[in-house]
Image (cartoon, rainbow, N blue to C red; front, side):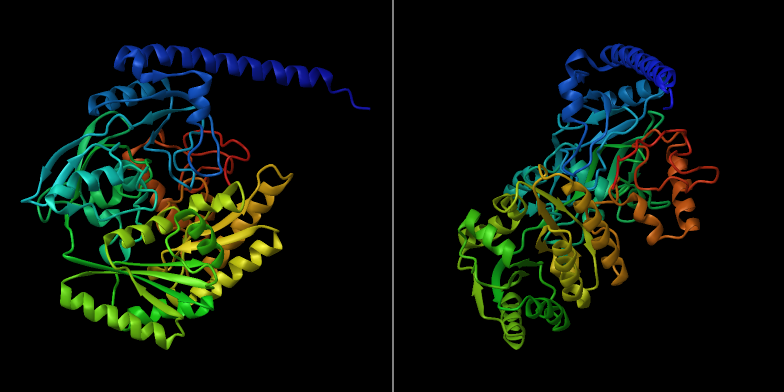
Length: 504
């Protein structure tokens, strides 16, 4: 029998000493942060650390201190204090991200922007509004309603997600098919860099001079700095909107209709698809009149001038009948439209009627490969004894396979992660990409080499280093370890150690 007692005791003593040093460092950090932004904006209790240790993904990290800034000056003070004390930081919006992008690692300091929720200026004549990053997506659209304008990106979590989070992940939503994702609707961003300096990326001019650093920042997931003010583009509300519900016996007929509508020259504002399991739980929740015996349904939204919309409705109807549609229902008024969309926007939460937990994926495949990949998703889920539910942005091939499960089952998370990995690879094998709108974060970070060469990844890491040489802004996200020359598995270039089991 090996005598390991003294070694275990030594390791335990070293671990305890390291934890004590960390506690002392954190205690000192808290004092500095309180002095900089006030005690009511600094939270360091165990409950706060626990609540902010994860986002809406299935991943969890460790935070040291949670800060709640109210303005750009507060964010500058936080970043400078973190840098002076050797702590990394993670910008966090509403925590609705699904890829682990806001999960803190390395005892990072959380910069939660929920209190920065002011719509500072609305300029209808010039078509923009200045907002703080904590403004909720839906609240912004409601604030713009009296002006006959809206912010076009509308993620399904728009009731809760923030504009800062939209910028971080370059979010899309149902209407990105016609209107584009967040990057098409952001004109300028005020950013606090990793050294605490403030810069303006982009501008309100039609053609800002220099490189498009605004475009580089959108979608960077907080790895290049913290957005503190955002100039968003205002989109006029369309004069006419028609929403159609198409139902099919066979899901492949619905998938074929998606490509046929686009091929017919119609680009809907939104083109969503739900499978039978999704329809069943959505209808039980929303009572919107979804046909629960349908193999799949399409939700098609058309907008524009009256004559054009009327013509498009007839084109969609004709194409659908050519693909064995069972019925075509046109919402009679705004109330019926809202009810249909209520079902779609709450589909993820409604999955709780099947299982208490779910893992939501985000990949993109060519429209012509939708049915092929959907069949693989069902096969993978069945093999791992999980329930697959599909609700997705069919128009641009942005899949959102939901794996429903009960986390209380022993070993279920291993099956969930294994199935998720196979779904990602099946999407890539079909010519797809890793993410459409949820970002890379931790969830898909280690899949990046499947899409990019080592030279590509090294170049991306060099760009990141220009903004943040010390790798203190949301470290260990997006770019895999080992991408930078001199790195090795398990560490980043700045010496951060990656916790085992922290990512999929």
